[in-house]
Length: 271
Image (cartoon, rainbow, N blue to C red; front, side, top):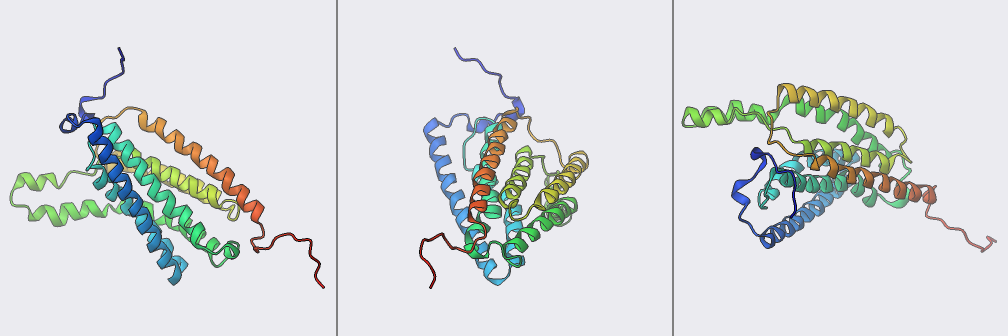
């Protein structure tokens, strides 16, 4: 016999318990493919914006990071999960893949190799992204534009009091989304720290601001979500390990490629 601690009753997704393993597997493969399409589409939009200006591409990256949880929630709702813990874990994986790719990897791929050290191109883009992460994300979270839209625009137009009251519910707290914010910023810092060491100071300030903004939102804005176990926290440790592994590979690539002039050693003499 196999024994394990059961999930909380509020965490069980009762309507999905009858789904077979094959059904859940097919659903997750399909949503994974759609997530890959979102990553490719996001990278294409960022590359198009990069041809206009680096500041515009930074704005596009921030906007993609903001709407990523909404898109992944729609995709994850297409899957059958026996508990809210696996639901949050699946959404966490998709959001992390989208945010890591569009924030750190796309910018490194689309910039020409010889322009990596150009202060007006990649370095300026990294600086702009850190600045927007420090300002835009806390401001949007404090403003709570979606909550105001629900309470002041949608709710008064409902046909009865009961349905109007439903739109006054605050957004639930998502621990998975909080972890993606942390791992995304940490991965972004590790990728570009060799050419932008100031990123460590930006990351420290961002984490400080995130802590107090999230603490205020938990106590004043968000409502309590379903009770989940510690699997999400354990799951996030693998992503933290991946950030360290990525740091080792990217740092070795950056140092070995310096000064990014695309030149190589040769035995030929110049006449």
